[in-house]
Image (cartoon, rainbow, N blue to C red):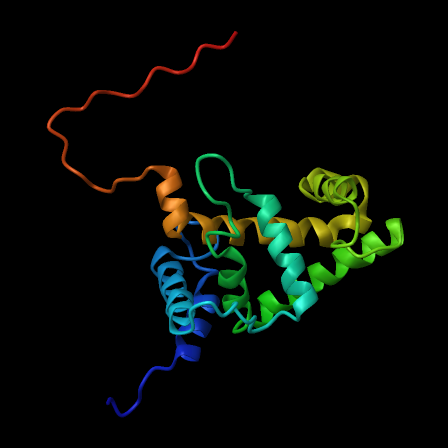
Length: 200
């Protein structure tokens, strides 16, 4: 064993802090994302049938995070969505080691519940689906924060969460399969790009 072993905590902290640097992805460098997915998979396979236990978010916030990830990238007939790809676990694990993520995401989830309580008398999770969609549609666009500065925190939060969710999804096995990415593979012949669909 090395004299100064690198701990899991050291790796996560470095990944989360280094995420601010440039990336092909939106937030997290590819190698870092792959490492986080491996860590989550290892934890899940060590205790089969045991549900993931959040490292940072309390149960209500983690459930809200899970619903949001599912709304950002839902499952469809082609593949599973962000939840099936492990995005909530991915985001929770990174957030557990990064104070900035804790403030941005924890504060954003509190903001979301607060707005829903003000508007509907219920938290985001307890609000009807039309109210959830209406609020997310409002905070999905930066221009809306210019018209209503009261939602600027929500706009920042939701933009950040969408980036983390897409990074988590497209670096997972499900997301890579959804892209139909086969890697740098030699082809005997290149059939060319498919013709664009005709617009009626």
